[in-house]
Length: 98
Image (cartoon, rainbow, N blue to C red; front, side, top):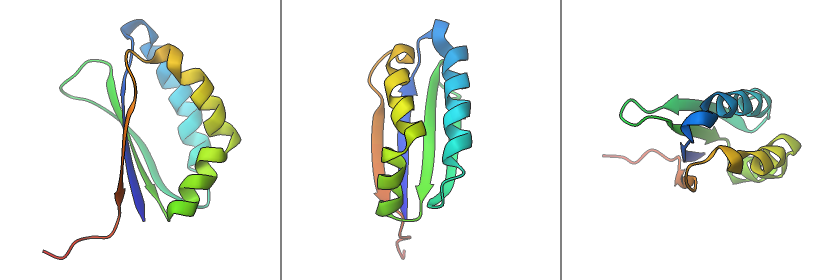
C-alpha cells in the first residue's frame, strides 16, 4: 500500500475555483481500480491550506493514476490556483509493529 500526502496553499481569490477543480479530480480518481481512498482536507490552522490524503493499492496504481487523463488535465490547471509549490510526501503503507 502507498499513502501520499500533498499539501496545497491556495490564492485566496482562487479558492472557489480550486474546490471545483478538486471536486472533478476526486470524483474521477475514486473510480480508479487501485485507489483505496482519496480525501481532500482543509487545514484548521491555516487559511486556504489543503491536504490531499491518498491511499493506493500499490505503486503500480499510483503510476496508472499519474498517467490518467483526469490527473494530467489537473496538472495543467492547478498552477493558476497555487500561492506556492505543492508539497508531496509518499509513505509505505505497511504498519510497523510497536
